[in-house]
Image (cartoon, rainbow, N blue to C red; front, side):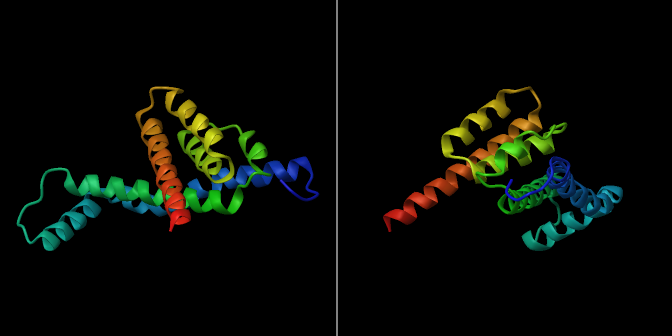
Length: 160
């Protein structure tokens, strides 16, 4: 990190970078979680209206809610990574004690933003292979897929 911050100030900023997005997400999702059945029914109703069908396949609304939730989470993490990480800050961000899948995934997105493709790829593979946590594997794969899409888009842009 640049500037003349003391070590404790840097650590406090890094702690907030990792913890505040999750606090925001908690506050956003908690009302939905507390009233999930109502929320699921309203999504089910929207699906019926959109598809003009009387019934919706079992679990479809829940699946849409979960996929949308992960898209929101990853979108917020991507914005945090874009705003808070670059090649000069990634080493300090890597030193944070990552105690959750959320921290590890946010760090991977930061690496995607701040590091070269080879370093990012190694980190993504390490995260994917580090344990049997399905969610961590799924999210690591999502981040890696977005990276590939971004890289292909950049390469295509250079060709046009």
